[in-house]
Image (cartoon, rainbow, N blue to C red; front, side, top):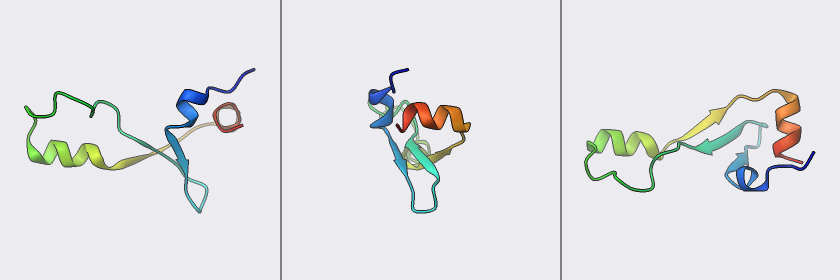
Length: 59
């Protein structure tokens, strides 16, 4: 099976092996949101995947 390179480029593996990614939905239409909502979207989120899924995206 081919790995999904477009999604792989959005992931980052931390020093301890956690997989993090940016929250979706923050490219545009953010002017209407409160400042708190905008800042919450800036945080990276830890993603929980099975070993099979990790092998697919990070190979």
